Length: 352
Image 1 (spheres, rainbow, N blue to C red):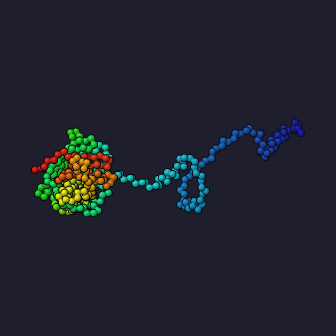
Image 2: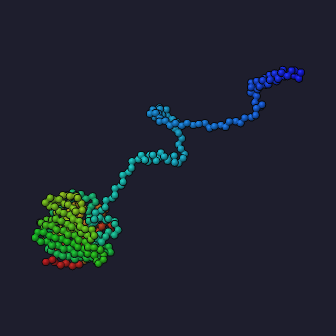
């Protein structure tokens, strides 16, 4: 069909109707090819909104009521070590080990170069576990004490060489006893022990004992007989004072007196002699000397030996003249580590 012969107004109406029909068909069918392609909108990442909330108190109860299946153990080393670290932190901390107590003077201290005084002094022989007083009463002797005397000795201790003098002065029911060890020039400082007290039928009754060593000052033991107590300058300890107790120097003269009494009474002289000896830092030690004749000694002597009673104790050896007044010919203290102080008598002169 053609519209060429139609009037002009009819042709315009027909064209308008055709255009409307085509537009309606496109809208209904969704036909897009007639329009130019439009760009796709860019995708936007989803927005995340995080809000932290405190778990309700019942969460732990819910977890306990609905346990989760066990998770596999982590393979990462740091993560795997965390439980071990937590367990270690829960363990109680161990108490520090107590420092071993330092041995008292006269035990083997093990200190190298113990000073000039240590090189010359006889050592303390206290037992580490000694009771404050002996378990049994000390024997009470009736010694025959010697007359005043002054004895001289050659002194050695390792490489140290020196001289020693023992002075015994009894007078008017009292006594003074002193031992001084002096090293050779440049070998160290001198060492001095002094005992003072009363005399009785049972021999020496010490009242004060002083130990003085170069560079270290004095230490003392006080025999408080009125209070029947023993006190020490190096310790706050006080112990009962048993009868017959001697200090660290007076025991020597007491034994000489016991041997003199046995000789005078024609008693056996090879029976053991027991003396109690007070330490310098507390406690009382029982010293038992075995007595044997030493015919090989020159001159012949009675040899008395006190064996150590503990790992830090001291061995004491004493050689007494076989003739009265039985003064020592030799005295040796040997420590647990093997060091020894050796005094060998040179000569004797009576004190007027």
